Image (cartoon, rainbow, N blue to C red; front, side):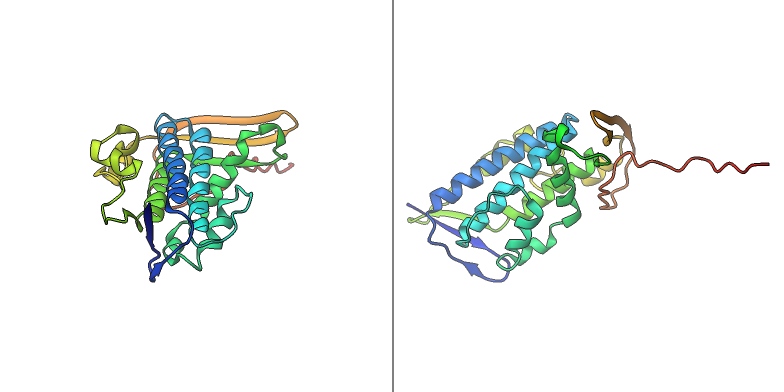
Length: 231
């Protein structure tokens, strides 16, 4: 039997939930996170962002399980994170605007259910680096060990040791990648807006991007036309 510890930043937290069950949820979250990274690296931005939402949902639910809270049937990672702040003050460092972007991107799974004027903007370098930072922030306090004291390795630990590309490529938090290198080159953009029933505008393009931590929620924002003054 394993035991489980988590450093919440302000003290030790204990749980009566079997460590194996929490490890199972953590493993599911890890797999979704790594798969989301690969999608993002390959410029499948809506798909990668949606799966990133799923990964964070599972990480947050593992933490809720750890503190003995009931796990809601919800995909809303903003609400899940808020529910954990009392127990894990380190989660205050998670960027709420980033979580809101992923929450919007998650809705792209069913485009026919999107309301008119729904829109989203996704920038590859920003989403990738912030996903890595967020997962690192969530996982950094986890410690697993057996009753003998021997550490228990997670899949992420193994991937770091073997330098697996799906995890370490362009990863500034779980590898030695330089953040500046990701922002010094052109990156992929995806923007979309619902303009009418079964009428969705989408655009993919490449451009430079500042590393400013800004995560706009709107995509393809209409610009006002030129003002015409009658003679």
